[in-house]
Image 1 (tube, rainbow, N blue to C red):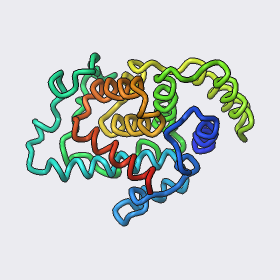
Image 2: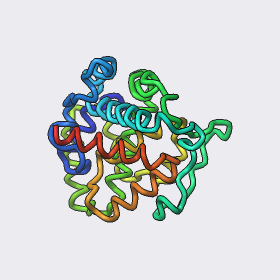
Image 3: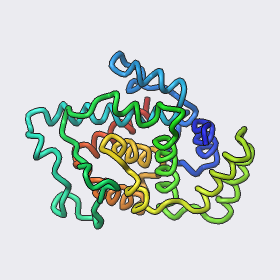
Length: 241
């Protein structure tokens, strides 16, 4: 599926992606994307709209997290969250490639790494993973009944997509990934941050089930509590802009 911005915009209008409000799914650009530091990300936003908004939020949150933790050692910052600071977490993330370590040491990831998750239109794996993250998150709160699903399917059917793209999206909607399957597909730290940001932006955070899902997702990907907070703050700032 190539037309990801149209797909996400349509899903937002259908009500599936409840967090994409205020024109975000339509490709709205915010300070996180259009600042001087984010000029490259802003160019990506013009091409990819909502997906670039996810990348912009993720990168800005990582910058804030890095600045706040500048005095802390990399070892402390990259340690997984434990039961003391996130008791809801129940699962552990095992990278699909064991040789890779999922760490979030401050100021070690680059903006370019965040951009590369979504900017290559010839390689849709990163874009598709973010779309799947949104669908999994939206499905996690259990508020999509059969009538709502039918409305979503009708909305998707009206999108200007190829028959192949529509069929692929219908398959995703009918059989969303489990959280465990989603996490297993995450290849690196920058993608993990964007997957979490996409999930926050797609979900109704006020629902207890949604909060539980986000808690388990962040713990499963070993995202530090400070970085989680920065992602939520950047998402709220974007929605209120």
